[in-house]
Length: 267
Image 1 (tube, one colour):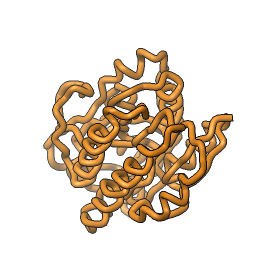
Image 2 (image 1 turned 135 degrees about the vertical axis):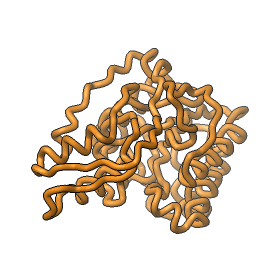
Image 3 (image 1 turned 45 degrees about the horizontal axis):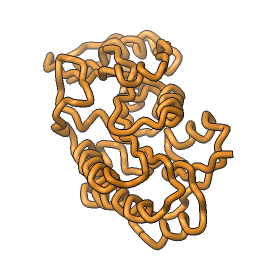
C-alpha cells in the first residue's frame, strides 16, 4: 500500500482527500509546520511515497487580519517541509495546494503560463511558497506539483464567501440588498478537486496545473438560487465586474472529466 504523508488533514480539502484516496495509508502531520522539530519527528524513519501539503491559513479575512502569521504558516511552513524533504530519497511526489488568487483578474480563461499578480494577501503567500518550491525542488529527485485551485462550492468554513452570502440572504428581511456581486468565478466541489489531485498523482504531473471546472459562474446567479430557496427578493448594487476562470487544458490531457455542478443542492 502506498504511504502518503498529509498536512492539513482536518481542513476542508484534507478531510475529503482522506475519504476519496482510500488506497493510501495516511500518516498525518499533527504538529505545527512553523516548527522544524515537529516536521522532523513526523518524517523521521518513514518511507513516504508522496506528500500532500494542504496546511495553510486560508480564509482571506484571517490572512488580512494577521498577515505575519499567514506568511509564517503558508510560506515559512512550506519552506521548512521542503528543506527536510530534500533529505528523504523515498518521496516520489510532492503536491502543494495553491490558489487561483495568484492570478490577476482576466476576461479570458487563465492559463498556467499567465504571469502571476496576486489579487489578495492570501494569494501572495501562496505565490511566495510556489516560488520556494520551484527553486528548491527543481533539481531534486522529488517531482513536485503545484495545484492552483479555483473556487470551492462546498467549503464548510464559516468565513467562506458563499456561506456568508447564504447567511445574509437567510434573514428575516424580505428584500435583501447585495453590493459588489457582479463577478464571475470557476467552481468545483471538494470531491472533484481531490479526484483531480489523484489523477495528477497517477500521472506524476510535474509543475503547475490549474484545478478548476473551466466554466464561468456568476455570483449573482448563485445569490438568486439562494434567494429562491428562502423566498427572498434581491436588489443588486455596484456593477464593477471581475473574472477568475481556469483554462484546464492540462488537467483534461490526463482524461479528467468535470462533473456538472448542481448549485442548488449546496444551499
